Length: 434
Ligand code: URA
Image 1 (cartoon, helix red, strand yellow):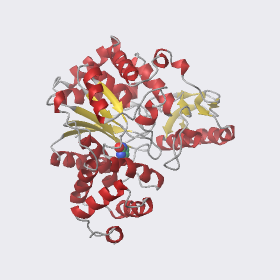
Image 2 (tube, protein in one colour; image 1 turned 135 degrees about the vertical axis):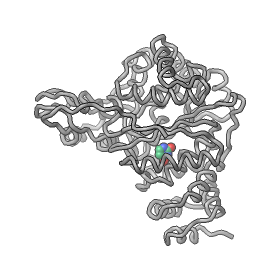
Image 3 (cartoon, rainbow, N blue to C red; image 1 turned 90 degrees about the vertical axis):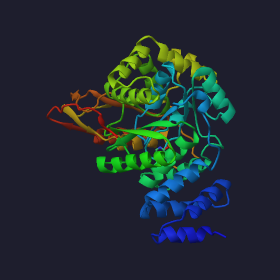
């Protein structure tokens, strides 16, 4: 008979866990037979002492099979999925997936909630009034059949172990860790049934992997898990030093995504969306030429088909599409306060992690796993790295319902924006494809 105390002690003492021990932990924690504080101790021990490749793979598979594993072969032999290792201002899925679906590739996407200082697609989508992210498996599949796309959160039945561990990690400072991230992402991807997966592996100040070496390690780990689970995995390493696009915060990011789908495309966001998308199209068998694939995507932005697909999905899942047609309808924070530059020069640095933490402080993220988030809180950037700034120019707006937070938030913005004398060249946001 296995005993959770022995398993915790083993990892605490830097020993290797067997497949049976990992499965026991995952299954019993999912069922509620292991408490949150015991799971916290084991997760912290994994965070500190690590896991070898075999343990990470066993953890991913056990988490994937903690619930149902979907069979999407009814959609053909190339079912493509996408996931990001997390970022700040990362609304890529909300933009990219409708574009891909508008090109005839079925999209069955299961996303997560905010984690640490990063946002989550499910929290963002829920800022569209009425949009239902907790869809049962049968409806999920029939929605994909009917509309060509569905974006949902984890139901009780899809990788429930990840759902619990993800929320727990978020509340015990155990997020940025290769074994835990790799197993979290790959368990969801295995459970949600796609056989081809494009992963956005973010690198930099606003990512969980702060340098390229660790990001490559994480990418290779996920590719290896994919091989064992017979999934083709492509990883695109992208820079996440400053936030992606101009908005950070749930409804603020949805508004930016809607505007993108209508043709208003910030350069950095466009680069990431098009790079990931062109690899998704390639894996889906829609074309081997990456540049041609990007052109197909652009065409469907310009002719409105991508936006129409998004609208169709939102309507199908109960969302009020009037908000898409007129984004001014989204509720606004009580206080939207500009922060003005105190000097002249060029923006040299805009630390995405700091912006992400500030956005959480304003109400956009959680401190405890049961916390409610504020859908409208966050930050709208007005200047980004490389931009010229003159005294009194608006650097950013802070959005909050909490008057008491305004002074501190304004001061933090002034600290986060590093202004230098020299203009710095903007470089590509795509680092490499593995
Ligand atoms: N995204 C996930 O789904 N899980 C993680 O652990 C990090 C990012």
